[in-house]
Length: 247
Image (cartoon, rainbow, N blue to C red; front, side):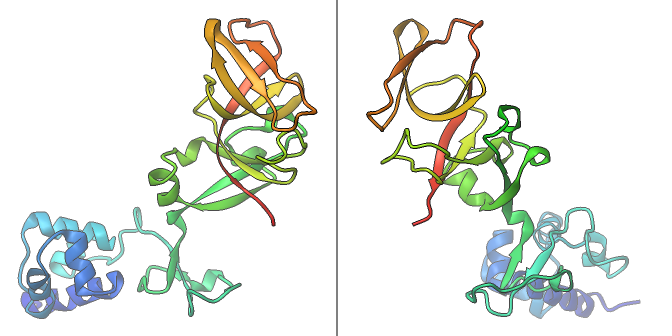
């Protein structure tokens, strides 16, 4: 039978190799550094609660971690990483052979990114937050979307501005990030469908459920839409949360 302390210490070293350091292990499991160090150095047995935490953060099978029996990797929840020889190097190619479960130093984890569809304005029916109707996708950091923009990545799409009505605020060719969960209208920049035309405009909610629609370009006159009129061929597609521009 395997010597538990020696075997467990060896497996904990493999966990450290996955997470990058004992410091990262202690941080992720939320224990003091000396405690985590004893697990690795001496094979000290953690509590059941901490054993579960270790297995979860390292994405290894808890049975393997505790006993050395069975597969090491938790195939159901494991994240795939692509190893980068130099994470600061530009145009670093990532191939299938580079992907795995290994050490996370200099690695990119695909699940850390949301692949937001880029939709065409040519067909109003295709302005949806779904990859099935997308021209392509753009990768956004999931943590940035959720914690900085405070948006649900599943409710987003992007499109390219194709007119000059918002020049000075949004220029022709800009990419706008649309939040499809905000369809009620309000104050801010919104993507609208009027007939078969997709427009990005500044809107302002006025009394009696009236929506004032204005442009940054003075050549385009403001107009008002009655949100209570369900018969008009009009739709609020979503709110603009962010834009990107080629300089």
